[in-house]
Amino acid sequence: MTDHAATVPAALLESVVRGWRDLSTRLVQLGRDRPEGDGGVFVNPPITRGSTVLFASLEAMDAAGHRRYDDEQLIYGAMGTPVQHLLEQVIAAIEGGAHAQIVPSGLAACALPLLACLAAGDHCLLSDTVYGPTRRFAEKVLRRFGVEITYFPPLASESELLALARPTTRVIYAESPGSHSFEVQDLRMLGRVARQLDARLIVDNTWGIGLIDPFALGAHISVQALTKYPAGHSDTIIGAVTVASDADWRLLRDTAIQSGQTAGPDDCWLTLRGLRTMGVRQERQAATAIAVALWLQSRPEVARVLHPALPSCPGHENWKRDFTGASSLFGVVFDPAFTGADLMAMIDSLTLFGIGASWGGYESLVLPTTGGISRTCQSVTQDGPACRFHIGLEAGELLIADLARGLDGMSATRRARAGA
Image (cartoon, rainbow, N blue to C red; front, side):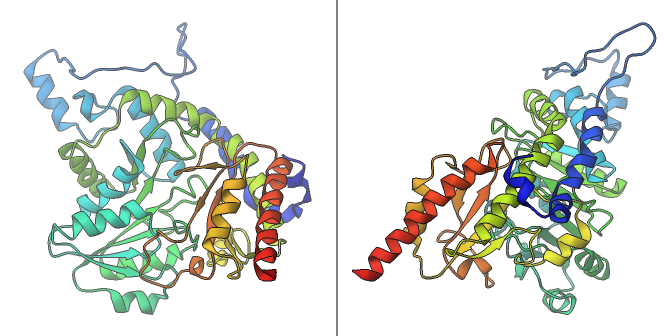
């Protein structure tokens, strides 16, 4: 824990870190070979690189093809390798699902279940706060294929959601918390609506991996950008889709094979290695993040902190009910008296926060979240200039000192402008 984490009220600190602490032992133990008899095994599995898989006979090859839904069956390199299958077992276990499919990126993970579950003439209810590339995929690909899209407010009520539904609604797609604006959706309610509509609820659970069981809350499919916390070192692009039922698994697996959506063994191995330390990394990063969020909340420049563990975040009660912890990514909305240019100058002045896309690695990042994000519904980030912080493994007191210099400079610029 950092020194600043010690200033966080004990109950709040416990609420954001307990899930990561509970997960750590499982992450060390899952997806590993165990020694048997007199033989030994390496702690980390070897990487198996290959395309062609040889069989003893045509009959054996044909039988393997029929077993393509088995979690460990080797058929062809593009259909999975031993280390991919180990990673799939770990992801399925920590997500609470039965099966997982590893894919080449987080966007591939978002797109695959939409391709699997939707056809021309179908209707999809898509949360207005989803990851931007998911929205673009819906607009540029699904619509071109004849799928109708309706965006719904992330905190819509059950009656509001049902009013937007159609007889052809086949998918409700949620992301909780919402990308950039951090609304925590009521997944239990969305699950009820999906059951009423005989539709599938797909949840992008990248922020909450290991902190909720999406299937217990009513999801049919869970999406993960493993690029983020599981890989954890900003050097791997990879994703996963997890399902709970055999019927959904067969549909998803067939679509992955038919569209060539599998990841390479090196990326799988790096992600499996990253998962071993995700619990301890995130326990530290989550503790620092809530300390930084509370400090930002006390600053006069800040209008609202969008951290799901704080009451100022939309849907906080849903987080409190459903999550066992919090991640190290959150948003900040500044006083409307500041301009977008003020925010940009403040971000440029920071020395410990990198400026770049993605998050989930060991390094702290900052990114503006106003000015280039598509929204159909009103967003809390439209109230003033806003940005997103990812808190890494740096010392909390140093991150706060860096932010203090930046915010002091931002306020000084505003005062000078007012006096001019």
